[in-house]
Image 1: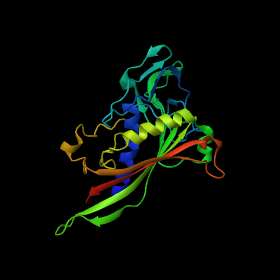
Image 2: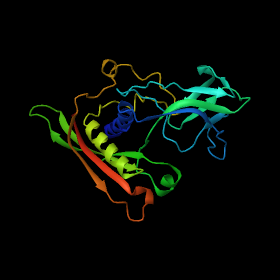
Image 3: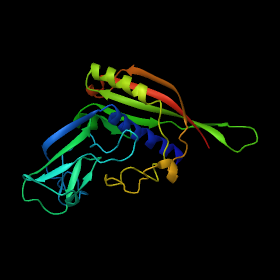
Length: 254
């Protein structure tokens, strides 16, 4: 994986951290979790349950470290021990160790906004509720750092595209993102992801990134933070009416 990918993932998880910092969290109680059958997801393990199309469940603290929310899963009216199931925080699913005898429900907190690795297509928009936030990165350019050294400055343009459900939400979330995106910690997320590929908490993620070598450069420079409101794309979804774009540049030493 390239350093650019680490920067993009750092931005991706930073947006989750901002939701945590600003309490963009929605508590859910007694939510019925339908079974994820093979026609929904042929790769889902047996005894997997979840509500499709909802934002990820809470899994980061305000410093960007994994800290599982208080998820409680019930088989009928009986709460299950935490070791009796695993949680896919990205997909909002639970996989039970054995088949339940009753209806599967859960108490949990979820993020207010979907966070996407790329701009959503029309099909995604028609099947998911807003808000949604997508992150992007442009190819960087290099400049000499100092005479007599092999180091270089590398600058990347970062973008955060927001699709809100209404104008008030767009105004508030654009303002919040613009104020809190000025500091994107740069981590080796390709090596130390907070969640595993199955969406579970990664026990190998270090409790102190700088101490364990997880950080590239915690002093990356951020500048030119701008935000603007955008019109929907030509031929795009009608859900793009309340759209904004926040852009910034990230500069670090290599």
